[in-house]
Amino acid sequence: MRAEYYPPKENVILHNEAPTDFYIVATGAVDLLIPEKGSDQFIGQAKFGEFCGEIGVLCYRPQLFTVGTKILTQLLRLNRTTFLNIIQANVGGGTII
Image (cartoon, rainbow, N blue to C red; front, side, top):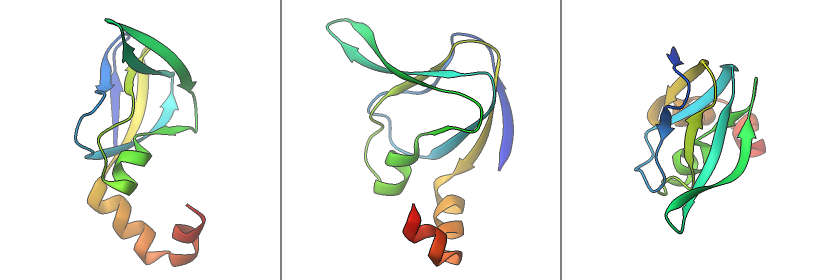
């Protein structure tokens, strides 16, 4: 797991991007957006302790949303392989997820 800082208004995950990483918001916030009719439609927001990119990583599907920072944001980044290994090593927790 790596901690990374992202400046305001930077896209972290792009809509329909191949799933490679799962992110946990450590500080700041990210917006969840879907491209619609030439602009981005706001769907929701992830703040401290919340996560994004999990559906793409767990189901190996293209990312459902564009995820972009609102302010300076620190994200904990976990690659797909490591995340799935953690779930497999903790079967009880993996069942809950």
